[in-house]
Amino acid sequence: FGPLGTWEGGREKAPAALCRKIAAAKLTGQAEIEIWGDGGQTRSFCYIDDCLEGIYRLMQSDHHEPLNLGQDRMVSINQLADLIAEIAGVRISKRHVEGPQGVRGRNSDNTLLKSVLGWEPEISLENGLRRTYAWIEEQVGEQMRAGDSALRAKADAV
Image 1 (cartoon, one colour):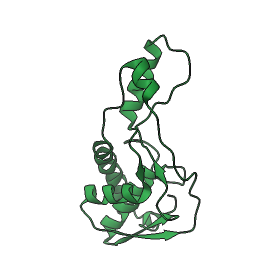
Image 2 (cartoon, rainbow, N blue to C red):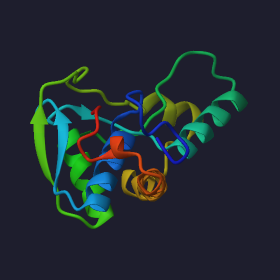
Image 3 (cartoon, one colour):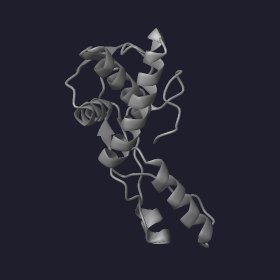
Image 4 (cartoon, rainbow, N blue to C red):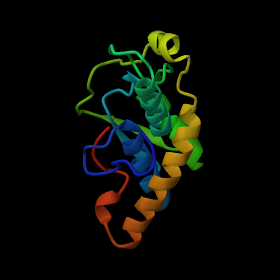
C-alpha cells in the first residue's frame, strides 16, 4: 500500500479503502463508515517502499526459491480503521455490513526473508498509513471540490 496506488473504484485494498472512507467522512462531517463483515478479519500490510526494497534485494541475491515478503505485524480491519481515524484526527463509528471479507486471517512469516536477505521491512504500519492517508485525503478533497458526490463516506469496498 502507499500513495499513488488504487484508492477508489472497488479494486483498492483495505488500507486505501479505509483511508478514502475516513477522509470522505472527515471532509463531509460524517461520523460513520461502513466496514464489510465484523471487522475481525486480520491482515498484514507492507508499505510499497519496503516491497520494492525487498524485491531489489532479492534480485541481487543468489536465492532462487519463493519466499514471503511482507510485514509480520498483523492487525484486524477494525484496528486498521482506528489507526487511520487517529491519523486523520477524527472519531468515527464503524457500521458493519454484509459484504465480501476474504479469508479470515493472513500474515507474512519473514523467517526465510531475514535468513536469506538479512533484512526485513522497516516502515511501520503507522508511518506508511500517515503518508498514504495524506495523499488519499488530498485526492478525495479534489474530487469533492470537483463535485463528485460518489465519494461520500458510504463508499463501497472493505
